[in-house]
Image 1 (cartoon, rainbow, N blue to C red):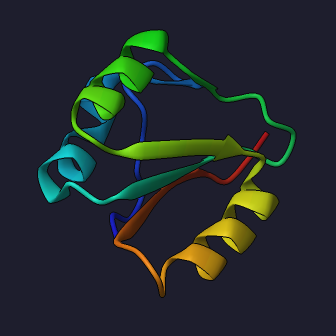
Image 2 (cartoon, rainbow, N blue to C red):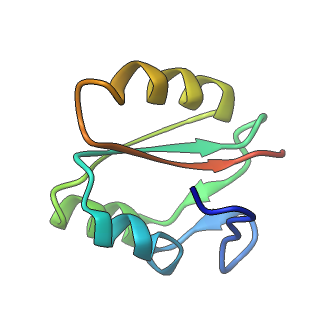
Length: 85
């Protein structure tokens, strides 16, 4: 758990924001895009995750939490969750 996780550029996720995730190399990364889905994931982020062999799923944060809880027992799973907007 990383308390107070912040993105480099507000409401978007870029590869630098996920350095610790990339280092941990989970099979699945669940990204919570906020309560209203306002946080965006850069195309470059998707490309780097794919090249690293990490499956990524983006959902609004409440649904992302449900997905994380469902998947975490069967696979090495990480979550990056935007908790507002």
